[in-house]
Image 1 (cartoon, rainbow, N blue to C red):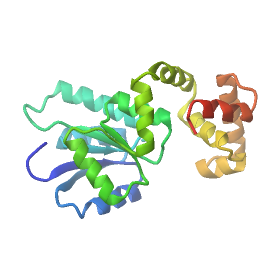
Image 2 (image 1 turned 60 degrees about the horizontal axis):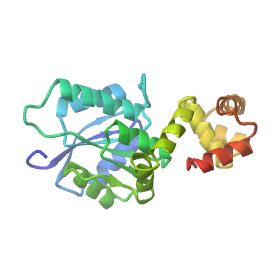
Image 3 (image 1 turned 30 degrees about the horizontal axis):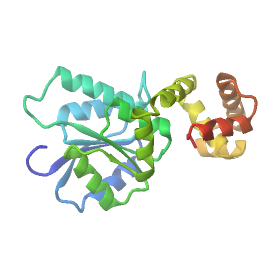
Length: 230
């Protein structure tokens, strides 16, 4: 870790979230926010320019071309830092901060190189503590998320890989619709939640059922529950 305050980059596509995080962390004089970014390209550029100690990274970001946004930032920054080493400068570590507590999101960013994953229900003091711990090399997870990681990198790795293969058939929007439908949301509720039309929801549900070879939303709920995706 670099001398002086811990240097942090906040990456989230919502300005209100970035502002809220900055405010929550402002009471800790040992943390200095050196940059913010709202999409994949901005995040990669910010990490390259500032070489922070920690990047607080949202999982779903606009601007990704190959991977879900957060995972693409991790991969591109890893490639960038490997190609242009900091010559003894500080290591850059990533802590995911997301509204999502879905197993596939947790596992994807950890596989891509994040040191931890916390949800946006975390308190300000706990978030500051998590940032410090990640900077020191610890792995930090919100309590219920640790089990996902243990399963993915322990005896359950084969099962998790199979789930990832199934989910790879779905687009990011189809995954979002799938999770809400599996949780019991009505089509109108899904449409309101995702700011899309009911007709678009129906189209996505049909695609999800076809790709997963399921016949009804009830089978979809059971499928998602069996794989701990709810």
